[in-house]
Image 1 (cartoon, rainbow, N blue to C red):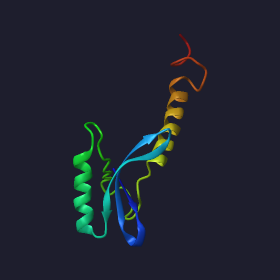
Image 2: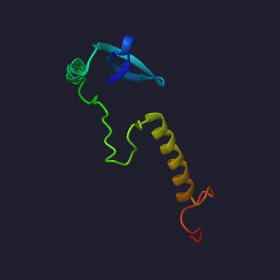
Image 3: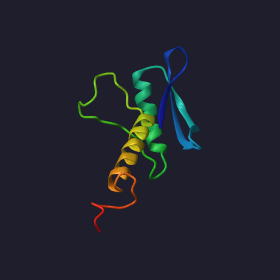
Image 4: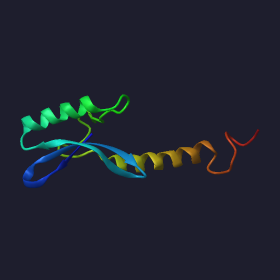
Length: 103
């Protein structure tokens, strides 16, 4: 489920899925011209989600500055960096052995 800017300040609500690294619109729910219409369209989009396909509402619990948006691409990048670091640490900095190397 995604919101994207439309013409003249409107907001489009769409159901999309990720295919080959790109967002592909599965269904256009509607275009909102105000907060009330947006709330109705978002509720309808949630209703139309397939089982197991959830919206991702991020609540950072005050960790982010107001106005800072969550970027799934940045989160993926940071996770990949962490994973590479963790593998290098757990594998003995690339030596191929675990632990102290005395075994």
